[in-house]
Every structure is written in structure tokens, then in C-alpha cells.
Image 1 (cartoon, rainbow, N blue to C red):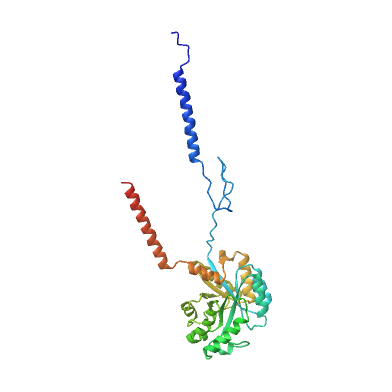
Image 2 (tube, rainbow, N blue to C red; image 1 turned 180 degrees about the horizontal axis):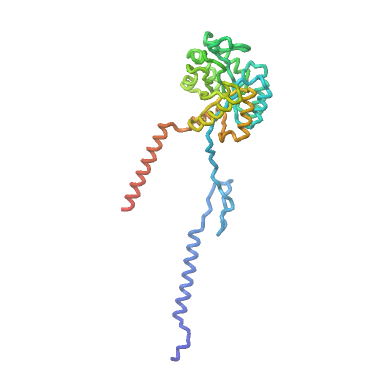
Length: 318
């Protein structure tokens, strides 16, 4: 009974020991789970972590533009400077193809280059109806290869700084393999891309350019074969639909009054939700887009990878 009022030293010792061990465990857990800084090469900034808080700098993933893409080329540039300025002021990445011997070709080319838009050469080529060959020199099927190469070179020289070329008219010329090959040889030697305007269903230009290793596209739709405002709007609507059905759609228009007006309203209203890109970017886009065969190969590879991973997990679980 004499010891009843004394402290129980055994219990006190155990309690202190428990508290010390608990504190030690908390300290170990804190150090273990504390985020470590990422080491980077000298000169690069590292993100500092604030204990118990959020990182000072948030890294957000880049937004992916999922809008359908299309290309619009405006042909027959070199006459109407007012129409050209209106089109450039729309702020859309149209491409402009200049007729090299048009009266305002040089002025137009300078304005296009200054605007940062893509400049092309609209090379006059022989049509079925030879009566249409007026006011400029045309490449013709009865010229020999040397003549075609010389004239093509002269026409390209008149539009310095061009990134590519397409044919003006040419329903007869682009159906002739020998003549077309001579022209494409010059385009290839200068490192230009080529757009087949497809003025005839008998054209061999796109297929031949592709076979020669030239970066190329072909026209899918004319916006203003009928230059009335209603017809241009209908073709623009068809262009929008086509961009959602296939990849790499190319439209060609001209600086007609109705075409410029309809395009202006279309751009003001959001361009149909499309992303208009220049021909060179469209070519790059199509080159990096997997083909149907490549997509199938990717699916097979992914399936094989999933199968192998499944086997490893199953083996690890035994």
C-alpha cells in the first residue's frame, strides 16, 4: 500500500518510447514521399516544388487543332490589284498564282511576298481550244522538249520567290506525256511543288509529277466555274462538305467580284469551321498522314504489344 501513490515509471517509459518511435516513423514517411527536384542540364530552369502546395509553374498540354483542313488557291493574279488587296486583307492563308506575263504580275508578286502568303506561278499551257491563247506565251505540245524547258524557265523567272506552280488552262498540254514531262523537269530542277489544275480529265500531270518525286497536289473543285454569287456559294458549301469526307482537298478560285465578295462573307462568318492551309503545308500534311496500309500495320503492332504485355502480366501473377 505504501507504493500506491508513486508514478508508474514502466508505463511512462513505454509511453515516451512510443511517441519517439511514432515521430521517427512520421519523419521517414515525410522524407520518402517528398517530391524530388528534376535534374536538368546547366542553363535550363527547373520547376521548384513548394512543400504542401502546388507547383509554381503549370505545364499545360498543347491544344490540338481538330478542324478539317483545306487549301484554296486564287488563280489569274496579275490584273486586278484591288481584288488582290481585298483577298490579302481577309487574313486567311490563301495561295496566289500569278500569270507571269500579266500587266501587273510584278506588282502583284511583290505584294503577295510582303504579305507572307504563298506565291505561285500560273504557267500558261495549251488548251483544246487554241483560240483562247491570247495575250501571253503558252507552252504547246508541238514545241520540242528544249523549247518547252526554255520557255518554262523564262516564265518562272518572271515571278521570283515563288514556292510552286500550277497550269493555266492546259487541257491539251497536260494530256500529253512528252510535253508535260519536259515542264515538270524544270519544276523539279528548281525545287518547286506542282499543283495539277485538272482542266481535263485526261491530264497526266499529277500522276507524272508524283512518279518523278515532285511534291504535288491536284485540284478537287473549282469555286467559280460559274461566276454568279449563288453558284460560288454553292461550290464553297460543296468544298466544306468535301473537306470532311476526304483529306487534302484543294479548291481553285479567281479574283472575280462575286468570288471575292462571297469569300469575304464566308471568312467573316468563321470560314465554315475549316482550317485553310497553304499548298506547301497541305503537301507536308498529306506526306505525314498514314495511309490505309500504314494504319492497318499500326493496329497490328498495337495488338501484338498488348498481347505480349498480357502474357508478361499473366506470368508475373503465377
